[in-house]
Length: 418
Ligand code: LLP
Image 1 (cartoon, rainbow, N blue to C red):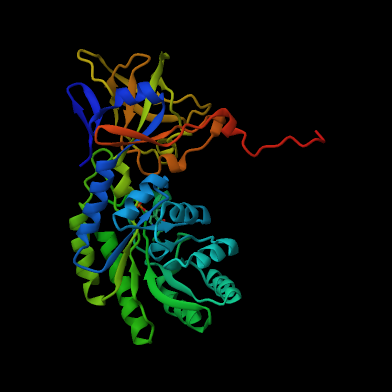
Image 2 (tube, rainbow, N blue to C red):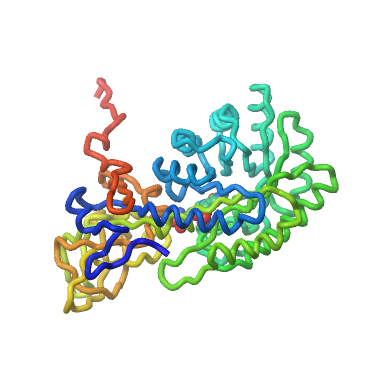
């Protein structure tokens, strides 16, 4: 359920016509619906109401401070993967006790920062990382709370770039050697084992891979407890998929029921790291048609947003539905590639899409762009990044300004020797 719906021929975000925002802020821009964000967070959180849990929003999906603050106020925490994300989470007011830190390449400086911030726990991915974390915590005279990320070797049946729980992946510690790894942790004086972590991939549209992974992890927790480990937290990661086109992922309640059935007797606090399912369909990218271009081979709709603004179609071949902000009757249908201004053939938002012909100046709305949209954007081709706008009811707010040309060169210097 989301609040981007037509009223007559106008596509609205909640109570505001998207066309009106475009006239006032220019294009392209990202647009989020407050009501949708709130609804998605609450539905997900409430699905786990029967067990102790923390929803640590995976902020790699969308790290805008306004969204982080909204989720923090709803009781959420944050799953961070860098010092930069930790900085944002703290700035937005996420309580450190609800922050978990994942990632295969944490640096000494990042560990130091997270320990000083007193976050809930580190999700550790290798023996070497464990040893370095022990050293950093030791130098500060503290203990680092740790969950070890287990690679359960299950196939999440998603795009290979976002599958993370297969044996060949760089993530986590192979489940077959997990017990040894926990023994290593036990020997380290500045490490306090508190949990187990798994995250098997993203845009997963079935419950089975989650359950298969969790069954294995649950067996591991039983063994760890037999050996005297205290396991208070089971972090089940993120990964629940959304509908971009015709996918039919389980709704959060069905997802939660399946997971709770596996973990309910463990007595652990369950940490959840949803990203896409909260924000994906709560955001869109609004772009303006610049030109129609026909070649002997194809038709192109050239728009003012490119792969630097939304890279998912270019990088993963992802499908994003594209709708006109104002529907016009009697338009012919055309099969077109919706392409941006960037100098790469990979710069497209849609390929061979059948849609009504749009004239220059018309607005197109790229749906389901709230997750991994702005966060993966870049300045490629020296294109200033678009603003982010949030609608709440009949009002809207700029939650990040459009970048200027000055922003593009910030920090650059021409040495006097040149
Ligand atoms: N936890 C960890 C440790 C993760 O690595 C991720 C995502 C999540 C949670 C959140 O997963 P989600 O609930 O959003 O599926 N750029 C790609 C997605 C990359 C996902 C990386 N990790 C895309 O645009 O599809």
